[in-house]
Image 1 (spheres, helix red, strand yellow):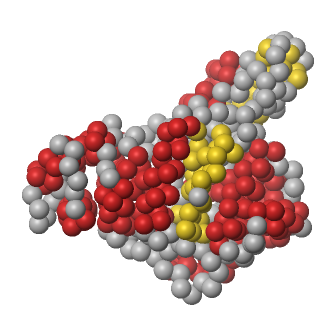
Image 2 (image 1 turned 90 degrees about the horizontal axis):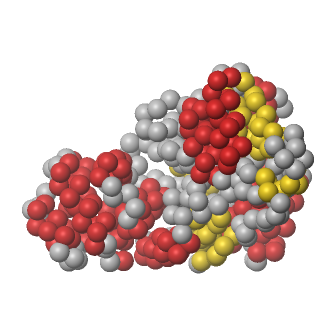
Image 3 (image 1 turned 45 degrees about the horizontal axis):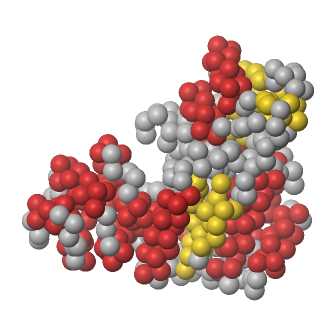
Amino acid sequence: MQHHPARLIGTKRDGGELGEDEIRDLVRGVVDGTLVDAQLGAFLMAVCCNGMTPRETAALTLAMRDSGRVLRHDHVQRPKVDKHSTGGVGDKVSLLLAPLVAAAGVAVPMVSGRGLGHTGGTIDKLASLPGYRTDLSPERFAQVLEQCGYAMAAPSAEIAPADRRMYATRDVTGTVESVPLITSSILSKKLAEGIDGLVMDVKCGRAAFLPQEHDAVQLTESLLAVGRQAGLRLAALVTDMDHPLGLAIGNALEVAEVLAALDGPCPDDLREITLALGVEMLLLAGVAADADGARGTLERLWRDGVVRQVFRHNLELQGGDGAVLDDPARLGRAPVVLPVEAAQRGFVADVDPLALGRVVVDLGGGRRQPGDAIDPHAGIVLGKVLGDAVEAGDVLAYVHARDRAAARVAAERVAAAMPVGEERRRRRPLVLRRLA
């Protein structure tokens, strides 16, 4: 490093502002190891405590982007737009959204992550599709994108390598919850994808990374400001994660829900969020003149089966078994499926997404640590949602587990997370705010 690390750390510790050159030097030290773990932890803590100016955050984001390979897709003539979600329970939107938007003429180069804790990850869901590969080389990624309109891959070591080390250090130093660090982590990887535009789905609610709406708005505003400084077209929706999205929670179960939705039957909330984000992507890409026109195009493509065809094309290009579309049983199934029954008559008074997400983790369907193995078939499928009327004995949900003992324990927890009462409650709006 050209600058002494202790001086740069001290500047942030005392609330000062670092220059672009200094920030780039720090990021070089992160990648080549000259900034040792203790110094990186101290720097991240200083940022977490004192924040960064918008200029500093933009400089950090671009330095992290440039720490590895920055993809270009000049051979793809379509506008290139991606979507990023901050994560939630039952959020399988990307699996529907990418083929939907690709069917409308927009290229979607999507680099996604794995799940950690109670929030699921797109890459884990895709791993439950027989044969489907997400470990694509940049060259193969580009080929798939050109041929079918979208490609889905796990982050490679070549893309924003500074973020890999910084995120791992944030995870063990209590510095994850920092708006500048979250902003730079998300955008550095997205900017390295070679996109023209990005739509953000920032979740808030009990199962969201940021439960409070004002915190979600603060992060959204930071993402928009920094993304614009980097020359990216952006739009963002702040959406509800106070209840699960869709009916399925768990990797193969969520994929099965997506396969069914390609043919039409789709939970209302999943359909609504998918269309809302799709509209924003078409508007950013400039392929639709207004929101009504964009929505009409997407609904027609979905209804006419075009989205299913694009999904199949991508599935086959990335090594998946196309027969799973016609026979979802090829996804497999947990050995035990146990119904959770209502003990009384009334209305479903709550569906606690955080509690249900944790049940799925304990069943083996999620990770406590990054290296944990995943049981793709473990999870929960809801039979009822908030406000539904039930009679005693009606099925509230089904637990999918590897053995009966685990299923029984999980069923008790699911029943507690889905109480039945006398008052009928309704879910708040799915889209809480739009920012652009």
